[in-house]
Amino acid sequence: MTLSTTEMVIRLAVAVILGGLIGLNRKRKDKPAGLRTMALVSLGSATFTIIGIESVIQLVSVQNDPSGVVSMVRLDTSRIIAGIVGGIGFLGAGAIIQSRGRIQGMTTASGIWVTATIGVSVGLGLYVLALATTFLAFIVLAFQHRLFKSEEETDET
Image 1 (spheres, rainbow, N blue to C red):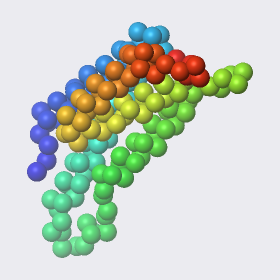
Image 2 (cartoon, helix red, strand yellow):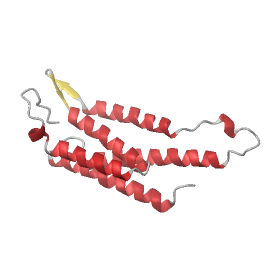
Image 3 (cartoon, rainbow, N blue to C red):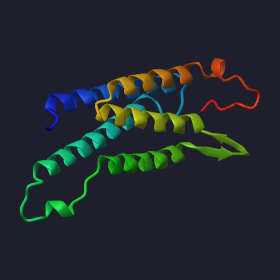
Image 4 (tube, helix red, strand yellow):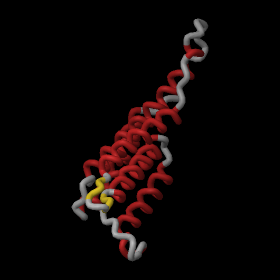
């Protein structure tokens, strides 16, 4: 059974909203990856995940193909998710800067990574997981200085 157009649009909208909430916190702190970046990361991750789901559904619907061509094709949603993780790793690496022995951008890179997981969760229809992840990430980002006080912890990026 394929996802309805309405369900796809709802999933994409939820991904943008939840990713945007993470980005809103970053924007308020004037960090490089803000509202638009996080919303787009979440949207893209959800879109790729939906594409993976739909690809598997379409493949299964033609499994009875007597030519045997379909049996040579292997589609797996987890491979698409793995591709998302690799791409997000590349994007996150671009957010990390080392200057004068100090590393900056780790929180931004981590935020990008978590935002991608939110998009994948929404793309899979795991709304409770996506909401819980968004809530917890927002708490960590909004209250990081109160929650994680440490003399060595100076990461504000």
